[in-house]
Length: 288
Image 1 (cartoon, rainbow, N blue to C red):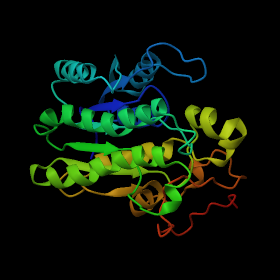
Image 2: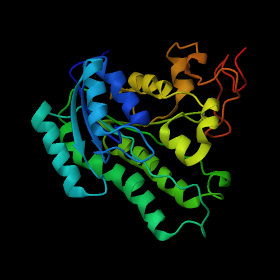
Image 3: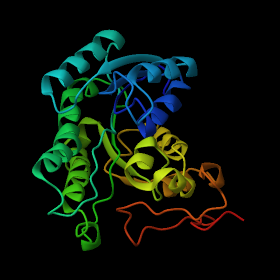
C-alpha cells in the first residue's frame, strides 16, 4: 500500500522524528499538515514549519504549515478545520509533539510538570479527539502515537516520575481508544525506538553532539511508521511497536543503515521492557 493522496495531521513535524515521518509519506505523494509551534527559527534547534513545508514539497508531497500550540483547544480545532478545508479530510493523525524533563520530584517544579502533561497527555488526547470525526469518514484511518509500551517496572518511574507519567499518558490513549474505536475501524497504535534517536532535541537536552554518534537516525522510525500506516486499520490496532522488531518482522535485515556511527555502541532508549525480543542479527554493539 501507498500513502499517495492521504492526508496526515502531524504534531511537532517541523523537525526531528515528526519531520522524518512526514518526508517518508511525502515520497508517496501524501498531503502533510505540519502542526507545530516553530514558526520562526529557534535559538538552538534547526527547522520551522516553513522549512519543513519546503522539504515536503521537494520530496513529492503537498504541505500545509500551521503554527499550532496543541495545549490550545481553539488553535487545534482551527488547524483541523483548515486541514479539512485544504485537503478534504484527514486520514491519519500522528501525535509526535512531546515535552521532556528527566528530573526527579524535587527538581520538577509544577510549571514543568504542567508543561509535560499538557503537551504529552492532554495534547495527544485533544488532537486525537479533534481529528476523530474526520478519521471516522476516512477509508483506512490511523492514529499513531510516538509513545512507549506500558511497562509498570519501577525503574522507569523512580528517576523521573513526572515525565514517565506524561509519556505513559500518551500510551494510555492508545490502549483506551484502540478498544473504543475498534468496531468503527479507526486504528490506534504506538511506536517507540529501542535506541536513542539522533535529533536536535536529543543533542540539546540529553546527549550533546558527541552522544549522537551512539544513536540511530530518524529514518528507522520513519520507515517503521510507514509500515504501520499502510496496514489495514481494522487488522492493525492496539499495538505497542518497537521499531526494529516491527521492521524485522516486515523483512528488513540491514539495521546498520540506521546507525549514526557504526563504530559506536548504541545507546538504549528509555521505557523498553526488559523482555522485548531482540531480532536475530540486531546488536547494540559496534557493527562488524
